[in-house]
Image (tube, rainbow over the protein chains, first blue to last red):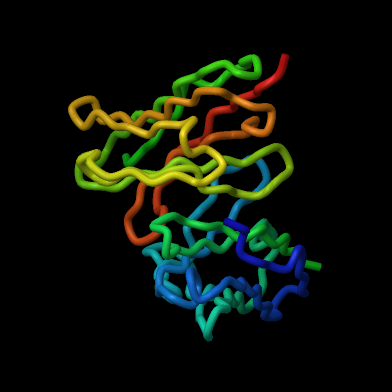
Length: 110
Length: 116
């Protein structure tokens, strides 16, 4: 059960857009539309930002969007704001009926 | 207010046991699958285990299978994680989370430290 692959870090300036990738296999990301994305600020619990690949929970800004192509899912944040600076994690359901997280991506807003 | 509150963490020696609890309030606990997720110091999130709404089905990460047991008491609105044969690498903050189209509600976490 290796973690899904995410870039260790990404950065962008306020107002710009960034995309974080999450690469798995056909046994997880590619095989199911059960990819979620979580935001975690230091010392805080994670917060659900996207579920089922591209759906936003109530209350989450529409600046956050998700997509998937093959074995890779992506989280895009548009109109970057200082408050978006955080760690982001993807997760996916797997063929073993387990869940898998990505290694996490640190977003820096320059 | 929908809330999850973990408890039971602490310092334990290698090989020891600990039982974590997660008290749910503000929603119909018995209707939801639940998860345990952990985060080692300075590291990423790692899924540990999940249980279905009535407790009849469970699943575990390979790293804890055979050592950890997830359970729930729907009458007490409480989720549990029994952790046996603890190792140094089990040191982490342990979060419980509700499953509703992703993990939509999380507790604040409880810290488990395995050290002699």
